Image 1 (cartoon, rainbow, N blue to C red):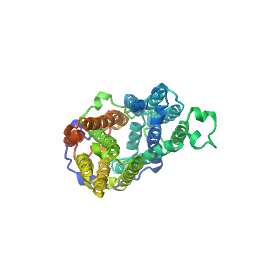
Image 2 (cartoon, rainbow, N blue to C red; image 1 turned 180 degrees about the vertical axis):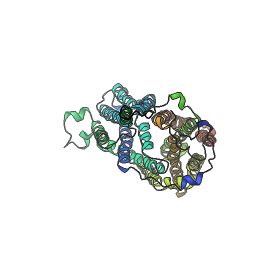
Image 3 (tube, rainbow, N blue to C red; image 1 turned 90 degrees about the vertical axis):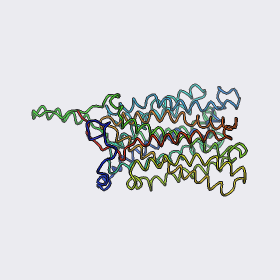
Image 4 (tube, rainbow, N blue to C red; image 1 turned 45 degrees about the vertical axis):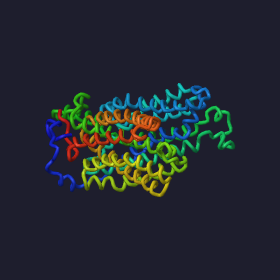
Length: 474
């Protein structure tokens, strides 16, 4: 969205920084953003509701043959979801630039709801895998949703709008496991209500039914209340009428740019930093519960599951509240690049604290100091999460108006791959470090410290401010 003809040559240090900060903020379109927030909550609600029972479900399927050691197959089920999303999210996002956001959002919601119901009706590993893969293939909503948010906002209020995303995600990520854990196997837990043969054959259908119904309800709300944010067809009809009656040349129709024309510096540097943040954040998120659960003797803290659950829940709540209160203010006060850079800097002490906590726990046990240091990791994680909103402001600003869906699709496709790789890589490195006592069992943390340094170097490529908006050239 550069004001120059050559987007790649945008100055890194704009001269009019103060003018941008004091501009009057446009009021947020509350109804439209509320519908988008409803869409946002559906993905964590549907995807994370399976976590409380997925191990038990896999152990009961034909794939394990009763061998509990094979329950690890469940990881491939979730990888299939991200693989499917990686395969199609860019295509869905590009389609939204052509036919509009609303149809693609409806397709994504309907596909997610249907695949969720099919998951609950699966009795073999093959059908389970197919349902998750189809869910990922049809789920292009993350990129399209953020493109729609960009359509509905401008540079004066975009930070406020995107500040809501983390708290909505946190709500969905909290409700999903609660639904899955509370409603799984209702025939055993609530026999007076769910006593039929159906609930014996499909003991995990009820949580899928509830989450799927929520997704379908969101579909109804989108159909009824969401107004298309890029109404091209109407504009084209008006152009034709004006031309035929007034002999006036029609306004040119702006079409999405080819994909190769989007491979420009602003897009590439923004998306690259977005990937780096996601990769490090997902790795930290995978290492933390593993570190909390492993025995002190092998480098963890040996905490029981209930206490781990309390810690992770507190982290999610604190992060969401911190984002909603401080993110927009931080952006207005310090600017997008500084907020993002500081978020990336927190990766260094966050990963460095793990071996320090382990050493203290081995020497003194789980003392107050240990819990304070764990709390410090959680606080650093909350600061790290402010980087998501900041870098996404760069991503949206780098996109030409006619290709916002495409650029968002590129970003979401890339992070889908990062989300699939980061957790398995980090936990595998943890096991490798501990089993072979590499760097005293701390090789995994050294590895991510090096990656964090590389991410900081990459962040230097961002301009001091997001690129100014421009109208597409015809």
